[in-house]
Image 1 (cartoon, helix red, strand yellow):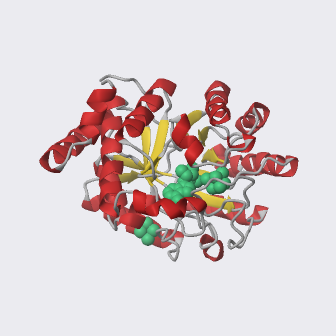
Image 2: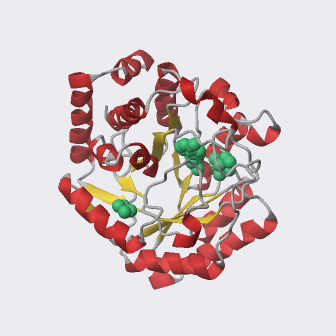
Length: 347
Ligand code: 5AD
Ligand code: SF4
Ligand code: FES
């Protein structure tokens, strides 16, 4: 598929859009299976050195109460993931590059790897780091890393980030290259429905994922946050339904382009549509990241407003997901890492 084919598919509406989603579901069931893989999400801390113009955790947002989980809290989340049969955890935090933080993550990875003979898979989502840091964490036992490119178009990237050297597009691309080189199953992704974003940008994002040959993609709708600079452009973005539909079409087209990658049904989908995650699964996604962060901190991980499950316990989410997925003919694969099969591109 070239850029024009992709744009035509992303523009599909009504019956044509339904056909696209149906075809993507068929391809997923044929190339993968009907299992959904879980990553128990541990939101380790919301301190961030960066100032992304769309994100509530940005350094410049003085209204966030900053926290960092203790080692004990992180390890008990990981133990809980293991007990719930999740198979994997994803450790996510605002970006920090101080030596103490880097060493602490390395130590935590080694501790988690001691459970039950290393049976818990570890995904990291800790932003841009040096190649040496990526290597240390990989050697300690993390094997997947998520770093969204946010937008693969440099001009749009610059519009949604401050213009300083801490927010460089080329550095972000080179971090992805370092992750791939280090040996991580590497994931990236974008926000859908950003101000100034066009169909051409979105088609370019899909081509970027393919060109980078990533193993995982997480994409979700942009949700305007009132305490961020980008909020003043909120009238430029499509409505919630349009952002949801475009997210679904992006997932579906990508499933056709890269049939065997893992794709996340992002929690942000659920914020703009009560059945958003199920819809994403039916459009070709196959991973869900239920939250394990202790209740008292969840509201402080305030990336965007109205996050789903903020008041639910891990046990409630587990039951809820079982039921929701059964209702759409999918099952959770428990006690497995759920890595994508060799992502052979067939179409
Ligand atoms: N809406 C949706 N997603 C957002 N993210 C950050 N801010 C927002 C927002 N306002 C996503 C980014 C980032 C991840 C941590 O959260 O894609 O990679
Ligand atoms: Fe920090 Fe990530 Fe939010 Fe940017 S998107 S401000 S790096 S937490
Ligand atoms: Fe958390 Fe439904 S998944 S309450």
